[in-house]
Image (cartoon, rainbow, N blue to C red; front, side):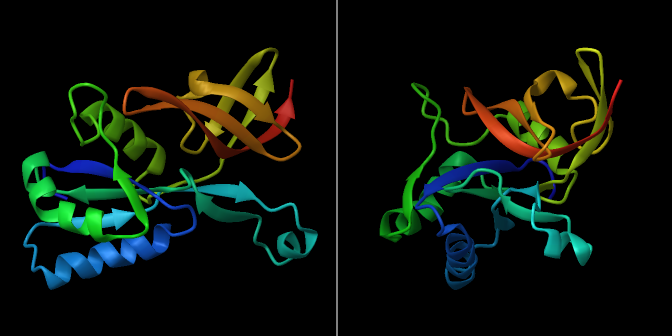
Length: 186
């Protein structure tokens, strides 16, 4: 998408995320919105514990990174977005609300927050699994989106192959589960 662009976040009923994404695409087409609009649900890879699935070579599946949230990427500024989308937001039974920053009421993610997520997604709208090792009390990530973000890891479950990382969204700290395979402990 061409600069400048913004990300807006809708809080929706859980398990309706894909329907809301489809509804937004239909709404934009029916209302002939000329702006670039892409609704998506950020995903994260999760390790399969099922031996049958691992035997066929599928070790990871995708799940929503933030269940109950739909992101909208568009080149519309906040005023244009509200003007064009509030009718949809108020008429949809699946959308609970448009997320806003506390007292100032801004609705778009800050550029820093957006760029942090884009770094983790690597252009795929999915946080793929990472791989690393433990050296003493330190985690060293050798590949994947967590490489260089070792400081954001707050918990590692080696058996189930995931890590909990802290991130920020709408000026709040949130914990997110992402796939991490620790291949050795030294």
